Length: 155
Length: 190
Image 1 (cartoon, rainbow over the protein chains, first blue to last red):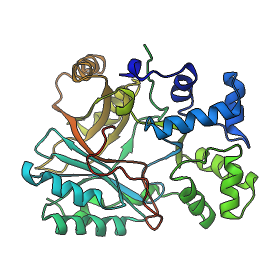
Image 2 (cartoon, chains in turn cyan, brown):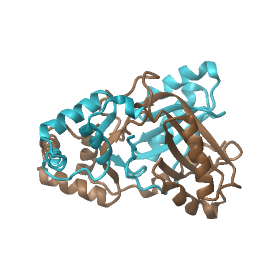
Image 3 (cartoon, rainbow over the protein chains, first blue to last red):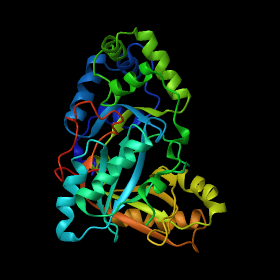
């Protein structure tokens, strides 16, 4: 739980307040530091610590799907005793960034990304062959969500 | 099931016009900005352009919507949001946009997309991701959403996540090294 992570006030602010509108200025961490009333080095150290602890994956950009390259959500229906080995094959592709087991007859869900639609199609086709399971591809048609990150609601 | 190429048809229609330097810039920041005093100058050095050009290009990518947001990318599960579910609805086509906008205004919804149905295997066409600290909290939030957006009569399904086999940022240029991946099933998170 968030309350048991023993986060400092600074860490909470870094996690919650900078998920969007990260400064596009030459010294962004110094700008954040000034705003938070701490030193630039404290911001850099705290972000490195949060990254090393796995609480943040990176400080960076989220790209709109299919504006750079081609990606799709995909699903497979896999028997329980095969799931781990099929999941490992899927995860071994550098094209795959998310790969989850979910509660449904379609129980393996992943997102695959490639440079183009043709390349993506080839990669998914190869996955079908290697795993002997058909893939349900569900590409994005319309995005309704304005991404402002995620409100962590500290208690 | 339809063939893969038919399932994927048309997904590239929103492809942004990017030049070679934009491409390199996107590759350079895929793993995140460097944690140093002048991160954009550091990227500029790698690309052999100047810092101002990096800033101008990133601003343009943001303005064109190629970059949805820039900032700290948190890992929900590690931060205590252990329950996450994909919530899917079978919505009449003419109501998808209205309901998608209604669902996406709540801050525990982190994605909300229209996707194709794939009949007969998959009847759902509106997808969102919902997060909470527990399964009960997620289910309560779904009940609340159903009332708020008047979804009572529409078929839906809640796909809670079980194991996470892999999670990391998307990679568009697969030639780069692949050191950032989460090993299969090793950690948990969104």
